[in-house]
Amino acid sequence: MRQYLLNIWNAFWTVLVGMRLTWRHLFIPAVTVQYPDERWTLPPNSRMQLFVNIDDCIGCRQCERACPVECITIDLIKAVPEDEREASTGHKVRFHVTKFDIDMAKCCYCNLCTIPCPTECIYMTPSYEDAAPDRFDLIYHFAKIPPEKIPELEEKARRFEEEEAAKKTKKKAAVAAN
Amino acid sequence: MVTQLVAGEYHLSYERQGDDLILQMGPQHPSTHGVLRLELVTDGELIKRITPHIGYLHRCFEKHAEAMTYPQVIPYVDRMDYVAAMSMELGYVLTVEKLMGLTDLPERLQYIRVIMAEFQRIASHLLAVGTYGLDTGAVTPFLWCFRDREKILDLFEWASGARLLYNYLWIGGVMQDLPPGFAEKAMEFLDYFEPRVKELNDLLSFNQIFIERTANIGVLPPDVAISYGVGGPNLRGSGVRWDLRKEEPYCIYDRFDFDVPVGTGEFGTLGAAWDRYMVRVREMLESIKILRQALDQLPGGDPNEAMPRRVRPPEGDAFMRTESPRGEIGFYIVSDGSEKPLRCKGRSPCFTAISAIDAIGRGGLIADAVAIVGSLDIVLGEIDR
Ligand code: SF4
Ligand code: SF4
Image (cartoon, rainbow over all chains, first blue to last red; front, side):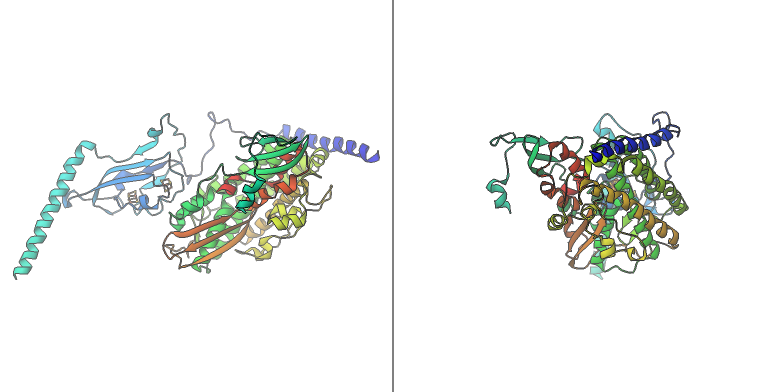
């Protein structure tokens, strides 16, 4: 009987202790952020949407290889020597990047692709409101070369390669003749 | 083992066996903390047997790991126990380092690892404690715990850029050094957080209603816990003083001064749900102790000094176990000398905890099933992998 009454008393008392805390918290400003109206500032190294500065991409495919879910697709065409240019970091760009797609629906935001990039042209930005109604809208295309130019570039690369091959065979023949 | 299962342990769902009623709890149930299905064989209000059915969250982690290079596995390890991703990373990373024989690591790196793992322990226990309150009918502590957990996640986001799945601890290094001013901010948080634990105790832990609800149910006796291989707070709740940070110190845990709280059975039976809950609360205080020491001693320098450019362990295998917030997480990795693991096995602490649920819950009331599952603090992502 005593235990029973003690239990009841304890229950009342501990609830009151809890209520006191709750009361005190009533006068503390709320921590909730009213999201669409307010936003908090993200730290600068937040890992959100990927961005590729395609002008600096040298087409080395390091990022493609580093990605664990294989969501980066890169297509390259070899550039002829007169088309080669320099990236802003001083690296030689020896390829035309005809396709640089990142499937952000597959991406797991692991940041593994940005580390090996020699020109630091692929990086994560703090932008996070990129929902799309269609799954295929989440495939981001970064390549700038228009598709109608691709056959032309291919043709150029092919011709250049043939010329090189011809030169090589000629050289070989010359060496053999000597 | 398999034959035994076929020979009559398994019951087809929805069929009555004599007077027993089979009750399906889950897979979509608000208090199963993931997708878990419990098959309760009940006799009136009493539970005669509990059979957990797992596998709803299976993502082929172990097979998938064989197709990826060692650093690429780390984001997947994060997703095993998504509530304590840092601790998972630490376990995996230490195993690979053991395999590679990488021992000479910078001091700063060692401290960063301990700091991250302990913050993760607090964050994970906050979630466990908060949701346990929710399971037993207390909503306020849940919100307060999540408010404090957010602050830890903010710290993590500041350091690594991500809030939940960090990919921060790397083999022989970290993704990026701690930002300047991290130690001060972290200290600030600890000063803020320590009184909050007392608030939590006043609000929930020593509330008589909560004690009545949890103190004598779900008793896991120490011998049963050991025979099932249960680890972590669930084992310590039964009064067994076993903590890998003390018993087999990894990283630099032997440098810190902290206690291992165990269940005391001060209200009711030793090893009851309340003891498991209370061990978690007390462990948070111990983590604060470790963190204060680690943040005080945090040396300067470059944590990534010894990071290998290519991870290519020699042929062989290695097993390493660490103390994650949920128990002993172990990784067993076999290497054939290439860049990809030949076999990567994760030993999950939650799996052993859930396998003991029949021993814990048998003979209890149906209404207690939720309180028992909640007290084990399981994460299904880790069980199913
Ligand atoms: S963040 Fe990770 S998953 Fe996403 S593209 Fe980069 S490497 Fe792939
Ligand atoms: S690693 Fe950088 S430079 Fe190389 S292909 Fe990727 S984005 Fe381009």
